[in-house]
Image (tube, rainbow, N blue to C red; front, side, top):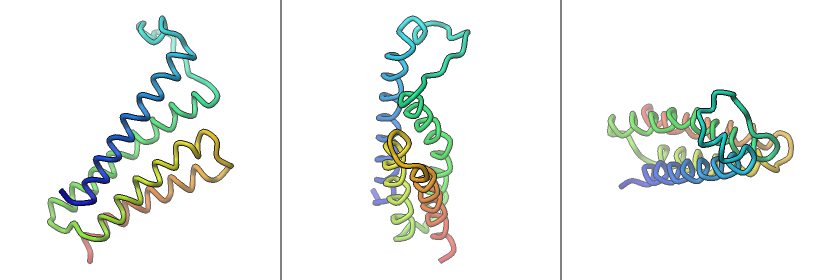
Length: 129
């Protein structure tokens, strides 16, 4: 398996970690009755717990773009150094994004988001070189 696909696998691991963490903080803050119930009355977690949940949601929003970029590059048979660089850049930026969202100074979280997006663009640049 290529290194860029290992970055995809690592990002899936990050997804699992984040959903586990988000589930734990939601359970602790909103209680087992609400978590296990029908959730007819929407509730949101707050504070750092809310940031953890929102960081996970943000990863779910951007992950399809990342996976699709790698898919297109691999189907085209163009995977190479740029795809590897972009994929690992995406993964590392997304790993930093979580603590940046939880505790980081203002501006660090959006910077991580931009770096991850640039990683996706770099992956797609593989199609043109």
